[in-house]
Length: 255
Image (cartoon, rainbow, N blue to C red; front, side, top):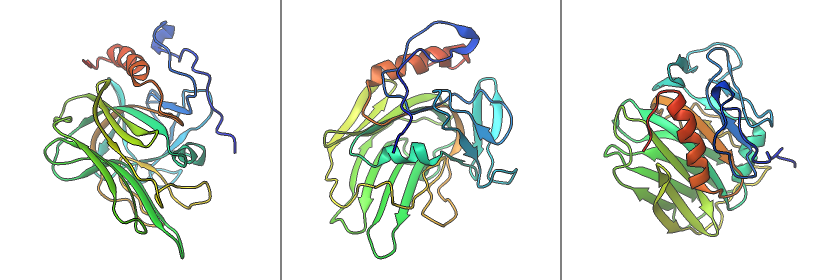
């Protein structure tokens, strides 16, 4: 199945400004500049546009558009659903997601990325990234058929009402978390029984956790201003440089 991978060309910076470029292999890039509507536009050129909320129409699960800076505001009951082409990059043992976000508070385990596959007669597999009450970021990969979950945690990464750049993924048997372009946690991972396939029935969710065929839970309250996906563990420093450049144009200061 083709993922429609990008070529790493210069993205459409606001105002046509020249700036840093992404590494090769870009799958989807959401910069939240739409400002209105039910669709979150993929700026990678691959056409992998995402859906706001549970349906294509207006409903209570839709985030609110913000314009200064360009962002989506999640009130603790909202979420975004990427298309299947983006979902399928989470099947091999290597990918990278990078985001610019701001948590409204740290009251509880807040999932800003999570999904679950309830396979009839098979393994229940799941992935999640969330903030814990003390501001740590945790990356989890698990399966009901595995002897244990694979989890790494990086402490004191997120502060309430503060913009931060977070990236995470898997590469060569390692789980990795980055904060503001710097590797802050790494750990080995046993992928046995935990890897998704393109035939698994699961729906990744931005801003919450969704088990297959159930209503999302553990909503993330706050704002998201960038979300970029690669099918391999791309150069995080290069991704951060693009995000920081564009964030500054929106009035968001990153270190």
